[in-house]
Image (cartoon, rainbow, N blue to C red; front, side, top):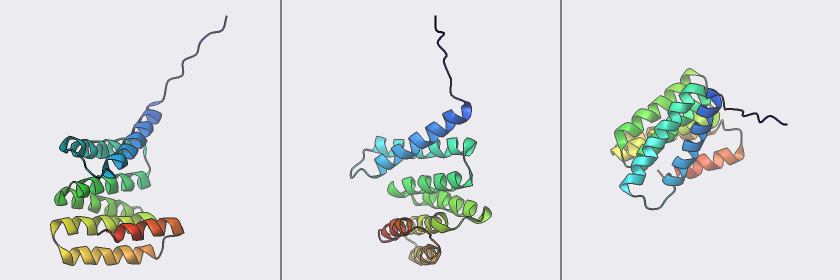
Length: 154
């Protein structure tokens, strides 16, 4: 008689799975043309949840990208102050860990977007320029195209 073996997930696998699940679900809500207030709240909560789980099991790149996504969720919701706070956290992680390329450029993109929502055109333009400068070091053409398309929406 065969014995059934049940393999449970490790805590790390659990946290990683939730981080990815919430990250992807946030994108689904951000891309909706029209969201209810409840969906906007859910989008923000899931962005924070994803970042929380990455904080337990992720590498610095996951933390930076998590902060970027929280910032973008707040930007999509039209909330400048928390968008700027999380954009700055993203930039701080990138600079502290020596991250460049796509992630550094998107940290500046997030700050520019936050300053646009806050109505600060001077800092918006300053960060757009920093994003463009950082984009010169993006290795993959596809990543550069994604960044430039996002910058065009600010």
